Image (cartoon, rainbow, N blue to C red; front, side, top):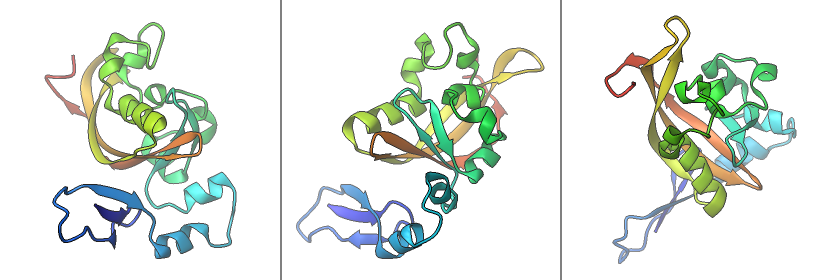
Length: 178
């Protein structure tokens, strides 16, 4: 099994010569460990802001506990307006506007973000570069004709999951967004 750094992607440990599994596990390399854990701001917010990528901290129900400045910028939200909300409410998912809200719709059982976080939370196994589509609510038409493509990574830390937004596309009209 090959091991790579979840933060910078360098190889930590090559697979054995007789290993044909192509499995990859993740860890952290010494350089990233030094960068992220050197004496600086030791608060959770300080740690999150030391990360270049947009990263949020969510609980098992996708409720935002914290986010770094890069994530708040991508999401277009102020910290005080986002913390405590479900991720679907923050990203303005069309399904979160339905009765009972984010995570409580028949459509939510297929939500890649929710399922990835739940699986990481339950198993401790993270994901890297997982693509997802989000149906967006359009304030001007009060409909959900646009969709947004994102690529996410997850990592369980203690009793929370770090949800990294690796790639955020632009909202597009699409036939799958009904």
